[in-house]
Image (tube, rainbow over all chains, first blue to last red; front, side, top):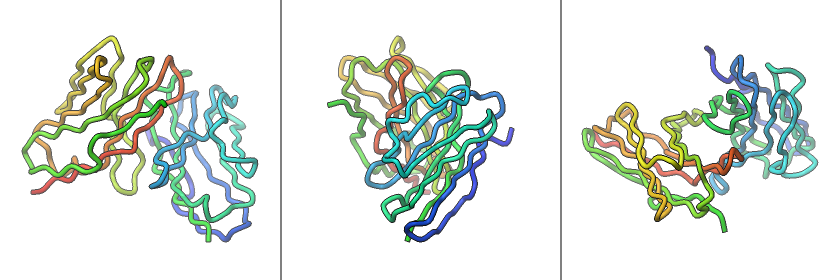
Length: 114
Length: 111
Protein backbone atom coordinates (compact mmCIF):
# COMPACT_ATOMS: atom_id res chain seq x y z
CA UNK A 1 0.00 0.00 0.00
CA UNK A 2 1.36 3.42 -0.94
CA UNK A 3 0.04 5.05 2.20
CA UNK A 4 -1.47 8.51 2.33
CA UNK A 5 -0.24 10.56 -0.60
CA UNK A 6 -0.01 14.33 -0.44
CA UNK A 7 0.95 16.86 -3.06
CA UNK A 8 2.79 19.05 -3.48
CA UNK A 9 5.58 18.30 -1.01
CA UNK A 10 6.63 21.91 -0.98
CA UNK A 11 4.74 25.05 -1.96
CA UNK A 12 6.12 28.56 -1.98
CA UNK A 13 3.69 31.31 -2.84
CA UNK A 14 3.14 34.99 -2.38
CA UNK A 15 0.68 36.54 0.00
CA UNK A 16 -2.75 36.84 -1.56
CA UNK A 17 -2.38 33.85 -3.86
CA UNK A 18 -4.64 30.82 -3.77
CA UNK A 19 -3.09 27.60 -2.51
CA UNK A 20 -4.54 24.12 -3.02
CA UNK A 21 -3.20 21.11 -1.16
CA UNK A 22 -4.15 17.62 -2.24
CA UNK A 23 -4.52 14.30 -0.50
CA UNK A 24 -5.21 10.71 -1.47
CA UNK A 25 -6.11 8.59 1.56
CA UNK A 26 -5.31 4.91 1.98
CA UNK A 27 -7.70 2.79 -0.03
CA UNK A 28 -10.47 1.45 2.19
CA UNK A 29 -10.11 4.15 4.81
CA UNK A 30 -13.22 6.23 5.11
CA UNK A 31 -12.12 8.90 7.57
CA UNK A 32 -9.83 11.70 6.44
CA UNK A 33 -8.19 14.39 8.51
CA UNK A 34 -6.35 17.60 7.75
CA UNK A 35 -3.81 18.77 10.35
CA UNK A 36 -1.53 21.79 10.50
CA UNK A 37 1.82 21.68 12.29
CA UNK A 38 3.81 24.67 13.50
CA UNK A 39 6.50 25.07 16.11
CA UNK A 40 4.31 27.36 18.16
CA UNK A 41 1.05 25.42 18.10
CA UNK A 42 2.11 21.86 17.38
CA UNK A 43 -0.31 19.57 15.54
CA UNK A 44 -3.77 21.07 15.17
CA UNK A 45 -6.77 19.35 13.66
CA UNK A 46 -8.36 21.55 11.02
CA UNK A 47 -11.17 19.36 9.72
CA UNK A 48 -12.13 15.76 9.35
CA UNK A 49 -14.41 13.85 7.03
CA UNK A 50 -16.19 10.55 7.41
CA UNK A 51 -17.55 8.91 4.27
CA UNK A 52 -16.74 12.13 2.38
CA UNK A 53 -18.92 14.22 4.71
CA UNK A 54 -17.32 16.95 6.86
CA UNK A 55 -17.91 16.00 10.50
CA UNK A 56 -15.95 18.59 12.44
CA UNK A 57 -14.52 21.75 10.91
CA UNK A 58 -14.19 23.67 14.16
CA UNK A 59 -10.43 23.79 13.72
CA UNK A 60 -10.54 25.65 10.42
CA UNK A 61 -8.95 29.01 11.23
CA UNK A 62 -11.19 31.26 9.22
CA UNK A 63 -13.19 31.60 6.04
CA UNK A 64 -10.04 31.74 3.96
CA UNK A 65 -9.71 28.00 4.55
CA UNK A 66 -11.94 25.46 2.87
CA UNK A 67 -11.78 21.71 2.39
CA UNK A 68 -13.58 19.33 0.11
CA UNK A 69 -13.79 15.61 -0.35
CA UNK A 70 -15.58 14.93 -3.64
CA UNK A 71 -14.97 11.18 -3.44
CA UNK A 72 -13.45 8.53 -1.22
CA UNK A 73 -10.02 8.79 -2.78
CA UNK A 74 -9.40 12.53 -2.94
CA UNK A 75 -9.51 15.61 -0.77
CA UNK A 76 -8.32 19.19 -1.11
CA UNK A 77 -7.53 21.93 1.36
CA UNK A 78 -7.67 25.39 -0.13
CA UNK A 79 -6.44 28.69 1.26
CA UNK A 80 -7.66 31.80 -0.49
CA UNK A 81 -6.16 34.33 -0.09
CA UNK A 82 -3.04 33.00 1.58
CA UNK A 83 -1.19 34.98 4.27
CA UNK A 84 2.34 34.63 5.73
CA UNK A 85 0.89 33.30 9.00
CA UNK A 86 -0.48 30.31 7.08
CA UNK A 87 3.08 29.06 6.62
CA UNK A 88 3.23 25.61 8.18
CA UNK A 89 3.37 21.91 7.35
CA UNK A 90 -0.05 20.58 6.43
CA UNK A 91 -0.68 16.90 6.98
CA UNK A 92 -3.42 14.70 5.69
CA UNK A 93 -4.24 11.51 7.58
CA UNK A 94 -6.73 8.70 7.12
CA UNK A 95 -8.18 5.96 9.27
CA UNK A 96 -10.50 3.02 8.96
CA UNK A 97 -14.12 3.48 9.88
CA UNK A 98 -15.40 6.45 11.83
CA UNK A 99 -12.48 6.21 14.17
CA UNK A 100 -10.16 8.93 15.33
CA UNK A 101 -7.77 6.19 16.32
CA UNK A 102 -4.70 4.89 14.51
CA UNK A 103 -4.42 7.67 12.02
CA UNK A 104 -2.01 7.12 9.17
CA UNK A 105 -0.32 10.34 8.10
CA UNK A 106 1.03 11.47 4.76
CA UNK A 107 4.42 13.11 4.37
CA UNK A 108 2.92 16.58 4.51
CA UNK A 109 3.05 19.73 2.42
CA UNK A 110 5.52 22.39 3.54
CA UNK A 111 3.80 25.70 2.76
CA UNK A 112 5.67 28.98 2.75
CA UNK A 113 3.73 32.17 2.12
CA UNK A 114 6.00 35.12 1.42
CA UNK B 1 -8.12 23.45 31.32
CA UNK B 2 -7.70 20.36 29.22
CA UNK B 3 -4.25 19.63 27.94
CA UNK B 4 -1.86 16.96 26.90
CA UNK B 5 1.70 17.83 27.65
CA UNK B 6 5.16 16.40 28.03
CA UNK B 7 7.48 16.66 31.00
CA UNK B 8 10.71 16.81 28.96
CA UNK B 9 11.05 18.60 25.66
CA UNK B 10 14.39 16.92 24.83
CA UNK B 11 15.93 13.61 25.79
CA UNK B 12 19.42 12.40 24.96
CA UNK B 13 20.35 8.75 25.48
CA UNK B 14 23.24 6.48 24.66
CA UNK B 15 22.76 3.84 22.01
CA UNK B 16 21.73 0.60 23.64
CA UNK B 17 20.22 2.24 26.70
CA UNK B 18 16.51 2.26 27.43
CA UNK B 19 14.53 5.47 26.83
CA UNK B 20 11.53 6.70 28.73
CA UNK B 21 9.39 9.48 27.33
CA UNK B 22 6.70 10.92 29.58
CA UNK B 23 3.37 12.57 28.95
CA UNK B 24 0.79 14.13 31.26
CA UNK B 25 -2.87 14.58 30.55
CA UNK B 26 -5.42 16.52 32.51
CA UNK B 27 -8.81 15.12 31.53
CA UNK B 28 -9.85 12.00 33.41
CA UNK B 29 -12.49 11.37 30.73
CA UNK B 30 -9.77 10.51 28.20
CA UNK B 31 -10.12 6.85 27.32
CA UNK B 32 -7.69 6.34 24.46
CA UNK B 33 -4.02 7.24 24.18
CA UNK B 34 -1.57 6.88 21.35
CA UNK B 35 2.10 7.47 20.67
CA UNK B 36 3.48 8.71 17.39
CA UNK B 37 7.04 9.02 16.12
CA UNK B 38 7.93 11.79 13.71
CA UNK B 39 11.22 11.80 11.86
CA UNK B 40 12.53 14.93 10.22
CA UNK B 41 10.66 15.72 7.02
CA UNK B 42 8.09 12.99 7.52
CA UNK B 43 4.61 12.66 8.88
CA UNK B 44 3.86 11.16 12.30
CA UNK B 45 4.05 7.38 12.36
CA UNK B 46 1.91 5.24 14.66
CA UNK B 47 3.90 3.40 17.33
CA UNK B 48 1.50 2.00 19.91
CA UNK B 49 -1.82 2.77 21.53
CA UNK B 50 -3.61 1.91 24.76
CA UNK B 51 -7.11 2.17 26.11
CA UNK B 52 -8.00 3.35 29.58
CA UNK B 53 -9.07 -0.13 30.68
CA UNK B 54 -5.42 -1.22 30.47
CA UNK B 55 -2.35 -0.02 32.30
CA UNK B 56 0.33 -1.58 30.13
CA UNK B 57 0.76 -2.63 26.56
CA UNK B 58 3.82 -3.97 24.80
CA UNK B 59 4.96 -3.88 21.23
CA UNK B 60 8.22 -4.59 19.53
CA UNK B 61 10.86 -2.91 21.74
CA UNK B 62 8.25 -0.46 23.00
CA UNK B 63 6.01 -0.45 26.04
CA UNK B 64 3.33 2.05 26.93
CA UNK B 65 2.35 2.51 30.56
CA UNK B 66 -0.78 4.29 31.67
CA UNK B 67 -1.27 5.54 35.21
CA UNK B 68 -4.79 6.87 35.46
CA UNK B 69 -4.40 7.82 39.11
CA UNK B 70 -1.89 10.53 38.28
CA UNK B 71 -2.95 10.97 34.66
CA UNK B 72 0.42 9.96 33.30
CA UNK B 73 1.47 8.13 30.17
CA UNK B 74 4.92 6.91 29.28
CA UNK B 75 6.64 5.31 26.31
CA UNK B 76 9.55 3.02 27.00
CA UNK B 77 11.93 2.10 24.21
CA UNK B 78 14.25 -0.80 24.89
CA UNK B 79 17.80 -0.89 23.54
CA UNK B 80 17.50 2.50 21.88
CA UNK B 81 18.99 2.67 18.39
CA UNK B 82 20.10 5.63 16.25
CA UNK B 83 17.02 5.04 14.10
CA UNK B 84 14.87 5.86 17.11
CA UNK B 85 16.02 9.49 16.98
CA UNK B 86 12.87 11.50 16.30
CA UNK B 87 10.20 13.61 17.95
CA UNK B 88 7.68 11.57 19.90
CA UNK B 89 4.12 12.75 20.43
CA UNK B 90 1.49 11.48 22.75
CA UNK B 91 -2.14 12.08 21.90
CA UNK B 92 -5.42 11.49 23.65
CA UNK B 93 -9.02 11.24 22.69
CA UNK B 94 -12.23 11.17 24.65
CA UNK B 95 -15.11 8.90 23.75
CA UNK B 96 -14.09 8.62 20.14
CA UNK B 97 -13.59 12.34 19.77
CA UNK B 98 -10.76 14.03 17.99
CA UNK B 99 -7.17 13.28 18.86
CA UNK B 100 -5.41 16.02 20.82
CA UNK B 101 -1.65 15.98 20.45
CA UNK B 102 0.97 17.01 22.95
CA UNK B 103 3.87 19.26 22.03
CA UNK B 104 6.38 16.46 21.50
CA UNK B 105 9.69 15.28 22.94
CA UNK B 106 12.80 15.14 20.83
CA UNK B 107 14.79 11.96 21.39
CA UNK B 108 18.45 12.06 20.43
CA UNK B 109 20.45 8.83 20.42
CA UNK B 110 24.20 9.13 20.80
CA UNK B 111 26.34 6.41 19.18
